[in-house]
Length: 66
Image 1 (cartoon, rainbow, N blue to C red):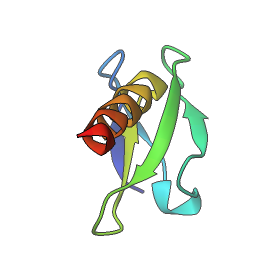
Image 2: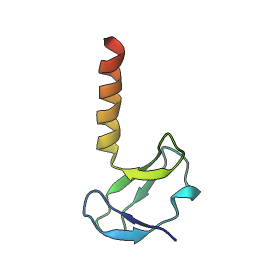
Image 3: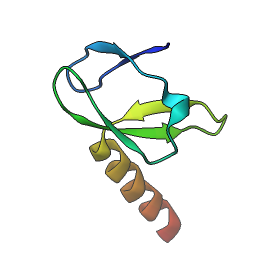
Image 4: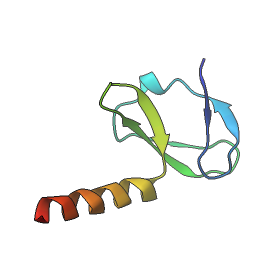
């Protein structure tokens, strides 16, 4: 099973991200942080914090205004 790294506490833990859909959340077993599963353009799952998602949405909004 793949090991992933929590962006909050930097602890590594095992989780099969392919079992989750885009936008699902999981909790870090070490620090309890809520982590968001997101798929990149290539279809690979990755982990980010919900705060990162909000920043990306704000950036996308600014781009649309231009």
